Image (cartoon, rainbow, N blue to C red; front, top):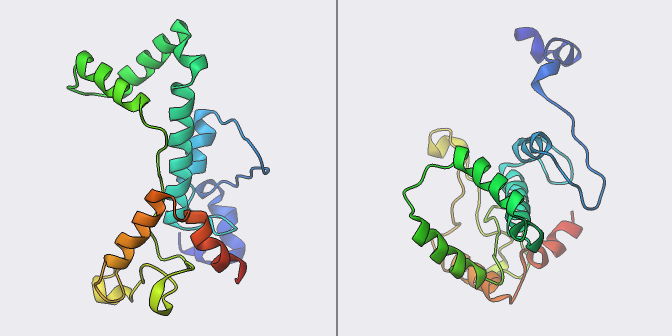
Length: 184
C-alpha cells in the first residue's frame, strides 16, 4: 500500500480504485450502473471534483428518474407501472397507506416546478458588501479536522435572501455563478 504513494507505481498496483467516465455534451440515456458511477464520482474536471458537484449530479439523476416515472408514456402503460411497483416494492419500506399515496399523487400533480440547488462556497455574483460567496471554508483544525462551511459573520440573512431569490425566480443558480465562472 505504501507504494501507491509513488505516482509511477500507484496506477500499476491500484488500477481497480478508480474508473474513468466520459460523457459527450447532450442528452445521455444511462442504465443503472452508469448512473451510479456518474453520481458517485468524486473526481472530475470542469468543476466536477467536489461533493457539491456530486450532489448536483445526484439531483439530475433523481429528477430524470422522477420525470421518466411520471411521464405520460409510463403512466399510461400498465406493464410499466407494474414493473415500477415491483422495483420500488423491493427497495422501499413504508407505512404510508394506499389512500395516502393517492392523496400524495394528487398533490404532486399540482406541482409545476421543483427547485433544486446546492448551497456551497462557490463564487457568486450580486452579493452585497463585496462578498463573493455565501459561505467560507475555515481551516480544518478549527473544527476537529472536519470540512465545514460557515457564514463569514454568523448572519444567515444573506443566505435566506439568496434562497428566496432562487425560489421566486428573481435569479437562477446558474445566473448567480455565471459571471464568477467566466472570470476564472
